[in-house]
Figure 1 (tube, one colour):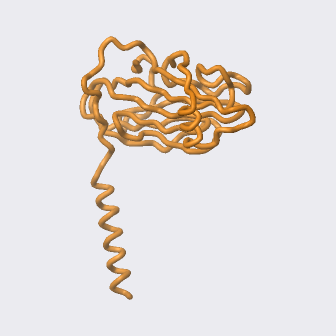
Figure 2 (cartoon, helix red, strand yellow; figure 1 turned 180 degrees about the vertical axis):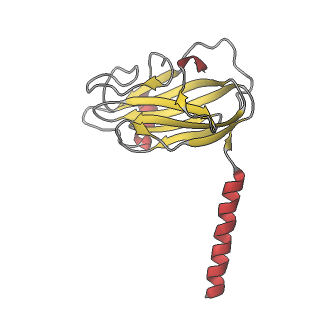
Figure 3 (cartoon, helix red, strand yellow; figure 1 turned 45 degrees about the vertical axis):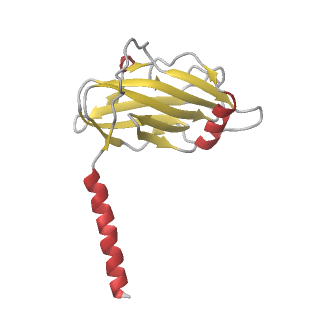
Length: 193
């Protein structure tokens, strides 16, 4: 029995060491690099049927799949907490809104970056093929866990975000910074679609 425990602990130690050695997730630059982009991010909205609620990302994806409608482009990812009754992002409603957000983000320098999102409610954010922000549930405007990523070269990286807001207020914001240099709100001018 003691040998089994020692073996199990050794295996767990190897898994943990492998995870630590793997380092930050490496983003893949867009290939080919896009040109002639408009400023901002494209967005499509899905709305829950009257009396139904969006409580999780799976429900948000289902609502989007059932009939997403193109919305007014986002200026970036700087949508501070709204007052109750104000529309979610650029949508036509305040509550039970799902959004599929697409486009690109420009990194001006390679390096290791820290990224997080402030969201009310759920978000699944991917940049350059890697998940960089995730929260599957309901919360007031609050931060996701900080993700550490490697940006191998300056340039444009694909953005793919699923977001939803259930009730009351909404927010969606992004912070970034090179590791060790502090995080700042991402300026709108680095987004394109």
